[in-house]
Image (cartoon, rainbow, N blue to C red; front, side, top):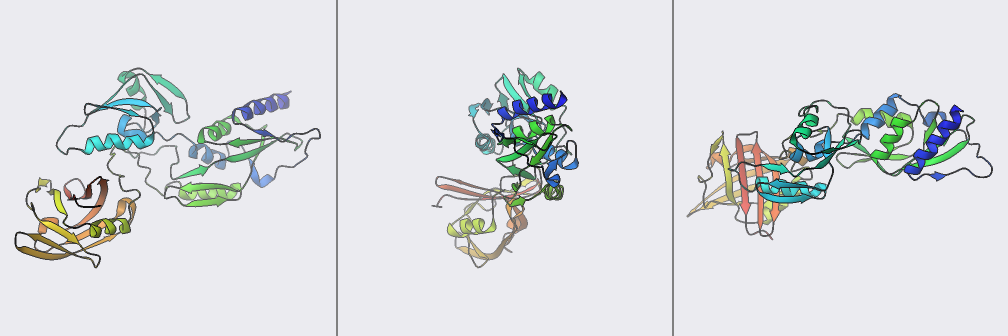
Length: 359
């Protein structure tokens, strides 16, 4: 009877995830490969469950909560401007409004009711900030350890074969999302014989794809890359603006446009925006740069190394000490007729070049 109940359950679950049945008039007697049989509560099953948890940190610019995210669409009021957030790309619109002025107080107001999605994909309707805070206060703080593994993701679809105790193939289930795979891993138990159909592919945060051929490789890969990246579980929406930046892009922009000027300059926490007013900076591919103002021209050097959010830009112009630093590329902004290259070190030093002549 228990076997019949479990088979019925698996058929019901498979309908939800759009399975394709493999059972015919004559039952297929296909033995599940032992090395590919997924065991409930095993190390690899637990790692898969953690990898498929819902990451709540991607919308921290709205809710400052790592353990859930807000179901889209959602309407917010940002510095007095109403925005309907329909996709994750729209988070950049919020950031653009926040970044428009450096000396204002940024404010965001959520229009309720909203629905939040917890790490296990449970959905809860929230009617006000009091209810929202009752959940966010239970989340881990910034960059604290949490269960979800964010440094790699599964590439779907992934399929699994279900067998009965006689090694008869009952059905094949196809998973098309983290939600579907996570729900299945949490639901199956010792009476189920489940075999993943390899190969499967995972993708790292940097876009690298890895082909996995068996459960041992899957466990080893998840354990190897579990902590290899910055999961960005903080509330600083500005600290990851250069995920896709590279030195070639930076060099092409700086050397491809002439007459850059200093739009923002802060050193040691002090504002020096006007110190180099009307100074024009030109960067060259040989690593030199010139700075001209009035009838004077001085020269210096510049280099760029690294990738992503760790690109160091070293500027050395002996005649202009406030420009000289081992800067880090914070962001490249390109709008119609306007380009900005934002360099920073910590919270006290900032140099932002602007150009109105880039094509």
